[in-house]
Picture 1: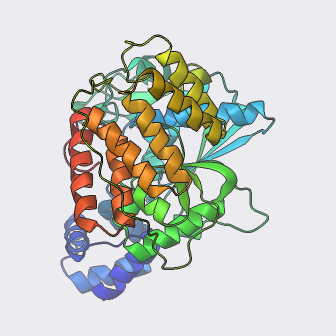
Picture 2: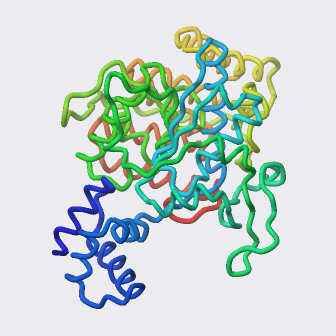
Length: 428
């Protein structure tokens, strides 16, 4: 009976769940409802949708907060504004899984801050946990939901309640933001993807693939490709970009946002991308770093023009900041060859600009010039050893080349950088 329950949980959630995690959740539910026999409880959960939902809530532990990885919301807001300027209304966005609502509500706040009207964007949010959806719809949050250093948005978009549960201070989201998101309980794998169904312009799917085995990752990526418009944007978690790129997506030139677009063609089932080995970079002993210490997450952008933070470079060379800005705007507009030349001009101005090397690495990677991409990414890391995005992309290239040991080391190094910069411990 427990084996049947395990299979049902995997079917409902799409997750490759560890047996001990399920057993722990079952024991906890048994204590809560006073049922002391595992097989009897398994039978109840299999026959009672409400109990199954309660068990799923125990197994699926959402870990999220408002404006987690703020650059993703800045990128999505700018991309939304760009589509609106081109005449697309409404722009359709999806958050999956949405957990208790912090992610889609962050997006709604970001759109409001940018002056995008409610009728210009549709925000859908889904999760397999009914309990999480119910909490999201209530729109009441506690201290753990606010972990960024800049909490100005909380003063603007939340009402401080007199008293929260268990004496903890609670904050209630304003009605106009709550009503901007349409929540429903569903699994990614059961979403409609017929030819008649509306596709999404932007999909947030962050920190989901980390729960899956390779076959389920492939299926999830295929599902997301079917739901995303051909010119749409996918925002992934920092640890998932490699898997998405392996299964039909390509890196998009939005620094620090972990953004992806559909690749020209999806890989064949079971296929793994391969590439030539990346060449080693000769050391540049006299190079200077053009990087500042990691900054705290920015508040939501007030205008689409605030997509990109100021470049990490200092300004020792006249015109470098302007050159980087022009190159980024050109890349974001999809003019990749022009952007590549503009970044090379930046390097002619400042040969030690880590940001220019990083962006050239992304652009070359999109052209499948793996060795050249690796060379530029390694130069970015040499100049800025804590360049998290460059480390992630180098890990991807190592995986493509079949060098699992190098990929693992790069991921571990990137994870340490992420933890230092975000102030969190362990995997997000």
